[in-house]
Image (cartoon, rainbow, N blue to C red):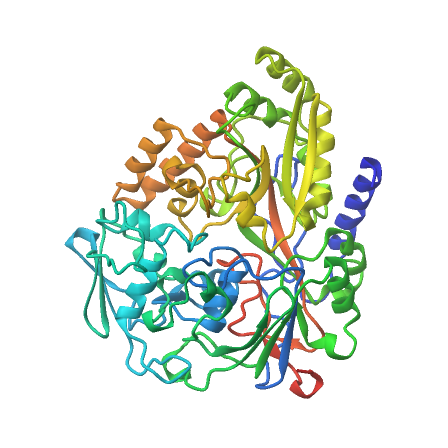
Length: 580
């Protein structure tokens, strides 16, 4: 579409959303640089469809396969929600409720949220009695320890880095596959696990919600092949998995709801159909005919589908568009020219037309301009704006900075997931105004994070967001900007390969702060300092639009695992209408 057509569509979307529909409530958090607050979001914080009835088959329509189902490697949304709600349990988890209540921690495999000692450097968890795997064998503390150790394996890339950052005595550790184990994770008996940390971590209970802290028995170890068949400790187990085509989950008869206060396990089966086009998925759920009435979508509704949804009250009532704590960024590869030059990176802040990117992402109804790195949820409800750049950018200023850097013309590569091609083209057109030529490469969504996380295949620029794993700046800035987290393969978060000694020193200082409020203020201040160094360009604060079928009940967007339906409580109104 031309820019003029896109802007006209964006205006129409805002008007349509403002008309309202049944079940709508909530507003966005403050104003963006574009001026004014966004209209009400569709069903923000609501549960759609009432309480489900047990039984039937819930179908998930997806344009992609899962990046990784192995809990040691699972660190993308919505795979993390899918895995930890359906296939495996963790020591601690979040409540299955919409809105603020969903941010509350509750015990999962453990009896409580853990007991700190030694000034917060030691954390002890006790497993519940009677928790079992899919074959009826008991879940043991040693199995949680083993999966934590697996997260260090060079071959099992892509997973959360918290264990490596927090545990003591991990220098040079390469995982348990060669028989080496961590002394800082102790299991004095089958139900007790003790973590010895290198520094006090007051938030370690929240860290234990991550898939790293799910159990994997050593007897089930299959290395990289474990991705295809994780051994279930949750309410469902894998019946079949045809990669890139179809995954079928059936009930795990050894899962005991008496030990699980979170997961309701309403459907008898979950079927994930993969490889569909995004627009095709939207159209099927919008129509909601036959078995498609019992479907949900795995990834975001396509922006071009918004005109079919927002003006139609019946369809809009089935749209979840949760406010989320994620910032989407244009990552600049700082490890090589031209983006090893801070002046060139600064020029990029002015060259990008964020307004056009917002439009390409569905318009102001579904996005707003980002003016800082930390999302509003981590910065007091509103983003800072230290650079004061207009939403459409300032190509004249960008040209001036590029000329000063001796780079009046540039040609750079940009890799994006297939579904983000529209945003990539908006970036391309915006940068062209400043004399920057962009070559776009689209990558299959299921392989995207593996490609951009491999330093041998990382392009000049990538498009990716970052979401906090729990409400703390410690889950955001260190992962996106600490040069010590960069890996040759499985690099996550720091896609810009930004290495800055002053930043790393300040991260360590903030992590050592005992006062959470003081630390929060310090993260916000560091955010502003990082904007001046411009390792990447913050683009968007997104809502994650998800459609559900007319026969779906209990659906809501989880407030922590942003951009995903909480699979722990979703089900069907009438199981007899589903097909499996």
